[in-house]
Image (cartoon, rainbow over all chains, first blue to last red; front, side, top):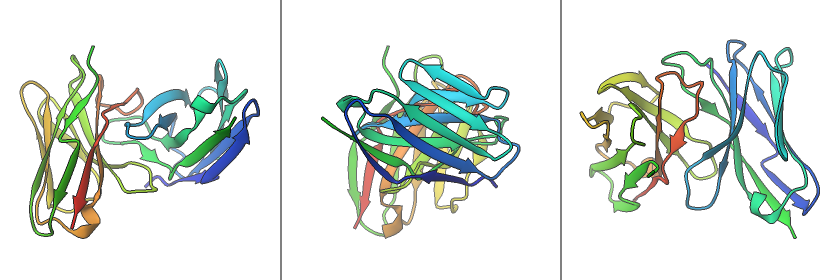
Length: 113
Length: 114
């Protein structure tokens, strides 16, 4: 089955700097890669996703890149703000029925004002 | 519109007891999935239900069971609780049965087994 590795487990950045979180996956059939943000006391919330037919996707300060050959994808947050502080999870799925998301272990991002 | 709701928020049980957790999906969503999130880990898939039928099951023992009602709400039941069952249990709803679309998560139920 799918296995998703996520690094780093913790990340501290100064406000205004960029943050990068990296994930690798094992199942070459996976073609859907979402990123979720989980704030304290809340459930995960989708912030951006990418499909295998796209190499990069951007939404304001957030971008995701995908390298299918190397089986890795990354989350990039630019101009970080204190409200970006949270736990971020990457996930992967082949996208079909009966093939649920497999999550990484998460990255705790702290943005220092 | 209300998001995914779960009850109770917190629960404390002792080993050997059973527990029932409840979830109400977003209006119009027919797919409900359950996840277990152990402290410091990502969510792990337990079940998916769609149109009141089980459509997927993760690698969990038979002590875990679930069902979906005609109004698409769902219950997760865990029997013979073990200390290792202590976790945040998340419910997610979505429009489709496939997982290549946004899963909307509830705030979760924090279960502590003593």
